[in-house]
Amino acid sequence: MVRIRQAIVVEGRYDKNTLSQIVDAPIFQTNGFGILKDKAQLDLLRRVASTRGLIVFTDSDGAGFVIRNYLKGAIAPQYLLHAYIPDIAGKEKRKSAPGKEGKLGVEGMTPEVILECLRRAGAVFENEEVQAAAHRITKQDLVELGLSGGAGSSAKRKALLKKLDFPEHMSANALLQALDLLYDLETLEQMVYELTSADGE
Image (cartoon, helix red, strand yellow):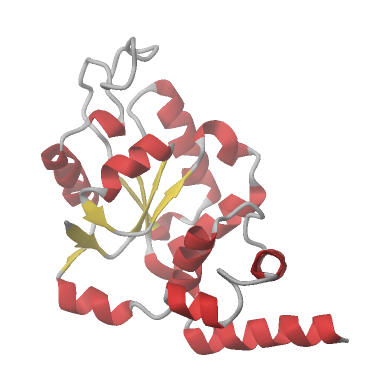
């Protein structure tokens, strides 16, 4: 497992699953062309990009380039890196037939190819010690703040998502990832306190 400083955005969950077995980095999904209409997800990607840097890692087919070009136009270029997979004919194991253009996508690449693509894109590879110190908000923090695993935690989480303009369907794990990238624990505690105070009025 290799740690990378930047966050990564891929097209779908199978791509995310492949990458998450190879690199230790925040990985977001565009949900295919869903990103073209999902303003909240795009805003989140912009915030992550400006905080940490974002690597766009889409398939090498036409659809992948439509999504890549959309993100290229929607996010400030100084925060973006672009990783490109090679054109390799074939199909992923889970599919019964190749895709429209007959090329393997990100999910079909070997770990060696993926790491080489990230290196060429300019990804910053970090050692364990440096990255470990950067982790600030944990699952336990969400539990203690009433955002996960308790009575009313779902409603509280939805209120926080609304306050932060995050996508409304984010899971607790996705919320944790975004909070840890964009805020520190003290700021999160203050925001939750404000939400609780507002509810009590």
